[in-house]
Image (cartoon, rainbow, N blue to C red):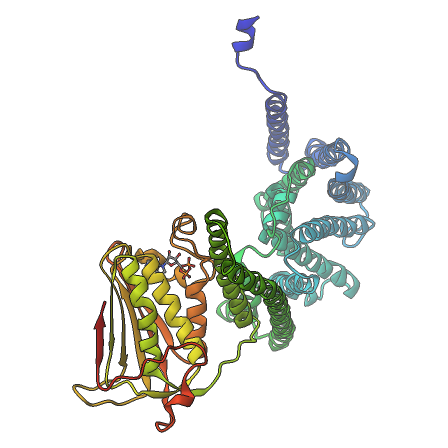
Length: 609
Ligand code: ADP
């Protein structure tokens, strides 16, 4: 039992493949034998005719069997192919009977089934194209139709120059016969156009099987050869051999059509841009190329054909271009619409966030104020400790809420900057006053330097500028465990000693802390981004500070840059244009409630704590 399990198992599908290979081989042998017998008899006599018609009838029977064995939903195309082959076989049988009876065969009752076979085969191709087009969904119907029409026009032009021209100028038969004969190359052209169109689409190609294309092309080649009226028995036998083999190949396609799954997404478009270009632009070269070929072959000029062909192709190219421009405009409009909608949605979200943060901040402020008042009452040590915890957490929460509030206001485009004269020197000194003791508490040195070139009175938004500086200084303190944290303020356009020109002030916040790896130096300015996920746990913070700094400096018309190295400290440089303000009322310019009463110092100020 165990041994039986180890033996390689021949699966059901493998057995089916093997069986179908044996059947195909047997059919191929029979067809080859029939063609050889037909050739040996030079296409004459009962045996040759039986071989010829036998192959055709056999192919149609085979195609019908192939179609009927498929499940219901998949039978349409194989049935159309089988019907096409049967109609051809019927035409050939009728033609042979008429020929045997000695009746005229220039135009006969064999022609309607032959024409019908074209129609049915074209219908099969059309159905395949339609199905794969719907599945791929990447091309609109209009474009598909223009592609197909272009290929039809090109094929008709080629066939016309090959044979139709000869037929319509043949005076040995009646105009009716000429018209019927000329209709064959036109039908050939349409069939060829559809075959080409199918072959250019990956999905359609997979759906119809290549043997259909090979069979159709063989058939068309024999048709062209027939219209060229070749001399010699060998040529006639070859032509007939092609007519024998072609239906067999078509019948093979009828067997295989239902087997292939064609669900590759987007594969229904023309096979890549080269094929697309060939159809759109290459087609325009066909009429002059045909004219040139005719000239080289010493045939007379055909200006009407050249004109009609070129005009038709230009008209198609015109329609295609118009559609392209139109669809591009539409896509552009849709894109703009989607962008506006996305922006509006984002703004609405930011507004919501801003409102919520505001609503949270108000009661939070009350809670913190109450905690402060509570601290002044009689409390035991444990209560004081708990209150302190509550206060610190409350402060953290408030700074987070304020960060979100600022950020969402900026995002919603609701943040308006003030433009007021203020004392920049005083602001820098105030910042130093705040951070010197904090740094000392953390065992870090705090340095600050104010360049004398920096104007004292400037115009801008002191509150927001102070916010940017404190954000950077907070971070510097947070991420530095030993060494120095510093603030340098200088004129960005200082020209040598004493020459102070320009309005741009440069604020450099530097530290000797943990630094920021190069790969993170851009992302840290994005909202909610931190160098690593554990930062929040180890150092606290929301990842909003630098994003707000960046937005604020940009709103102030400035920029923020970062120079840092992992483990070697960081240096944030903020450049902001600050126009000089009035000098005579420095007291008016103090940012309300922000700065202490340190007076501005003359000349350069440098302090180290
Ligand atoms: P957070 O609230 O987390 O500090 P920020 O936007 O201010 O948010 O900073 C984003 C991240 O940038 C920080 O989490 C930290 O990883 C890094 N960072 C900012 N400043 C410094 C600094 N001076 N030294 C080292 N890393 C810093």
